[in-house]
Image 1 (cartoon, rainbow, N blue to C red):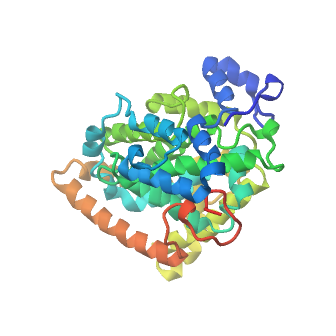
Image 2 (cartoon, rainbow, N blue to C red):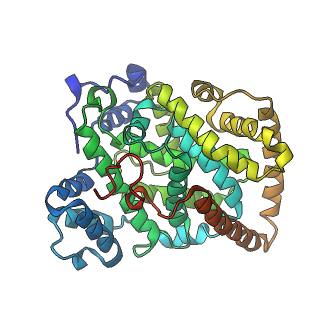
Length: 405
């Protein structure tokens, strides 16, 4: 779904437009154009829900993921067009290499959970326009823990062994995330609360492209900061994974970063132009800290040290986000930040040595997988989560456009 640029300009919430054009040239032009673009294939399928029905449309989607679109009775042309793109795997995708080089990532499961919350998710909250769909659908402050687990479920499926193969859950969940985006986009564009002139299209191509930085470049950097650096081949596989995930999510090739260098350029462009933090952004960070991150850090500490958990979270966020953005988000400064950096550097040296010892990777991976499985059970029990994504969540609280009415 696309919108017509207002007076040919960029959304009014953006900053430093002219400087971005001077520094990034055509990349900035493409990025700004992406503010007015949704996902034509997914948006067309969601538009057909008006005739086929929401529930039937989602059932068709799942069947097409699991059995192929030809197995779907009376599949609309929009669904066939969507799966023509999804089933045409690009030539640059090498899933065998991704699977081979990613098989030991789980050895750092404990650290990855911390980085997901305090780096990946929080980094996206420093953008008032990109965060607005969460506000208008009531999808975070009401239950920060639940949505964090939903995102975690998706990431677990993607990173599972062969998780992005055509018949695996990682593929299906990624396609469902794409359709969830389209459902939210359609509802918000029809809402008087959505200010297109200020924010562009909801979940636009430009901010979709930035989600790859949130879930790839930023966590890789964060993992290294706390001492859990992946091997070079694993890093390459990580970027390859997220390039393919971006393709499945419907990110246009003109905006889809292909490697670390392109992700770095996109991050710089995004940070230069992102809309300013507002009160909702601050409340988002406070919610994930209070409802999820602090309790999770407490799980790692003896009870007598629970008071240390909040400053540990704040220190981690200042390391992951940088002091300027953390201050905008009202993350308190803490004297623990230098200590966390020091401990991270120490663990980094230790883990780099251990990674080179023959036989340690499989053993540590099995330990990480056992920890991951136990944590998944514990977190779902703690937060009462029995579904994977919001489209399958119970109809409690504010109605969500992805749920069947």
